[in-house]
Image 1 (cartoon, helix red, strand yellow):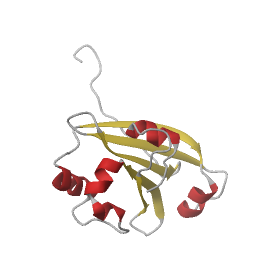
Image 2: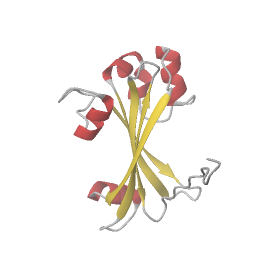
Image 3: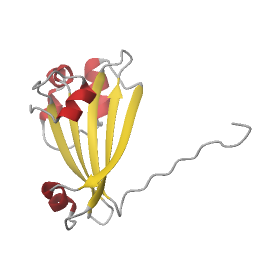
Length: 142
């Protein structure tokens, strides 16, 4: 368990210096090159009843199904915030980009039926690989 950065602690509604479980993974493209660096943070109440989250490596059923099975709590609402910034030295090394390098940062927080955070994930993707597409109604009919 680690003390998360302030913006993660805020998303998880943790008190200052409260620790959370940290899981990091490098997501690869089909050709094996790095696509995104994703860090998931789980609040203590989830981490305590889901010990497999503390193990390295993937969870075969996926973390969402595992957390739901162990806690009875599943995501019913998500909040996604996307920002852009320059990669840190560590991120640039993991993603194989030369600094300075622009990255898109997707901050995803999943909440249960009571509004409590289940997880907050921060994904960092080089600008050349990041793409967002939205389809939505427009005009008088919408």
